[in-house]
Length: 99
Image (tube, rainbow, N blue to C red):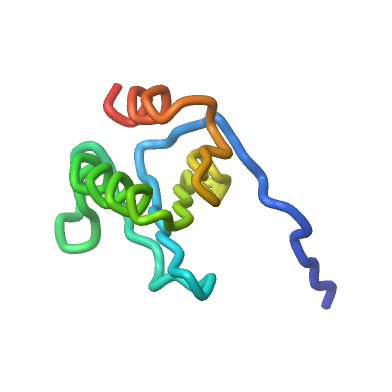
């Protein structure tokens, strides 16, 4: 069996209907991803995009790393070390989510 180790993060501009939010603590660990979409299909397993946006905003204010992946597991939003890594604007990302 061949194993591969990803050497760098892969960013994408493809925002899918179902997204997954990760908030990293100071120790570099997260508590698992939180699935979200604009209008949840599975309320027991997903939160709304509006609720996710509030979590993202709070994490950014707290200086935490935030990653959001699409259904292909590519990063569509990445905030780290006090700066937005991807995409170019926060508003552009949320505009796609709520479109």
